[in-house]
Image (spheres, helix red, strand yellow):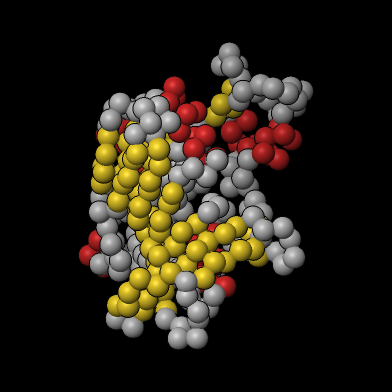
Length: 280
């Protein structure tokens, strides 16, 4: 079991220390040991030590709430789900407590640095019906991004390529010649202060897809710490938000057949006062 846990968990998790303290337990609450034989199809629980997480600035706006759905507009720098160094400061953990919805669960994810609309189900029993819509690409999503202008770039344009992101790597990459698995329509909506506000309509939802596609067009999104080059930014430095907004979501409700349309309360460019704070 010790070897399996080391293989499955990130390197920053002190597997040996947690095993020695008896903090890995099985379904019956029995502590696991390093040399216990591996047993497939079992559940293992553990509680790791959490760092003191700085509060992410900016409000989580509840755009809509009913018996089945909660739609929120999240600020940049707030994770969708608890993972890695961001546990308490995640949409799911904060809203489960604030809304008293212990089964609240996201139907999709936004990058931690991306702002905008996020859909969640209030209870597990509703998740399957709505999740199917995302899997079948029956949900229309519109993003907006602030990026440089290129006079020589013909717009609108559709970017189609193959994006791959390996586990444990920061950046996704385009694989030339591989079958297309990522598609985004890019349109210029307006100009503001020497930059363009672009309307992005993705048909697929690959990790970092919009960021990769705009960087590939030579118009990387303002504030992007990864594309086109990696910039060293502290994880709790909230001073420069990524100017990417999940702006609109529309779909036919699989439960009652109604047309659902939601819009972000935010707009680009994100004003500094929404996100700026001293590095923690």
